[in-house]
Image 1: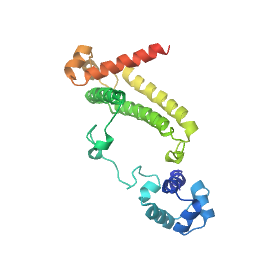
Image 2: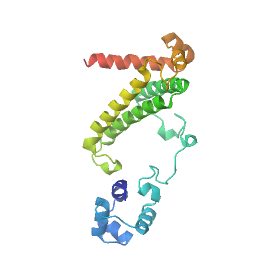
Image 3: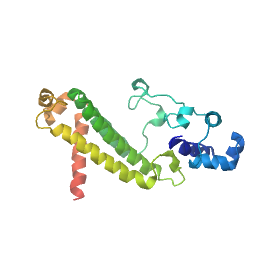
Length: 231
């Protein structure tokens, strides 16, 4: 059994708000055995996996950590909603600051990923994507931790290790991306003609991305002000 199973089994019970004793009774096993399953001390059989999945109303793939979706669905491009196209409850309300910052970031990402598409370099696109996802992951964990009652079993990596592990991974990914971008010979990954086409100026960005360039320029300005302020 993988490391995800004990964590998810524990998380589902705590999200249901029931004790180990209650869960064990419903699942038809002893509390001691359930405790061993939740701690990863013992491995269970397929019959228990199916029973637990039915009890918690999730798929076996979710319970085993094979899918992040409780239904076990595999996410495709078509399944991902466009920004701001979701339900009303998902839209930013209240203070103008989160709305403004969200737009600056989303619009800037539109420019960034369009430029990556023009370069047509899968390796660089993956590095940029991995770096950004880790950045969002780190900040989501910070926000998640605001309520100390939120169950840390939601995550595989322990809280005290998440920030240093993510930071180390981000540093390595950034170095790999920089090596791809800085290859002085043009390299086999990014042809020289593609590099030459990526001639960027503020005027050129404004022309190519009339709806988004202003957001990117403001994001750059704000970011560099923060860096100068922290020096």
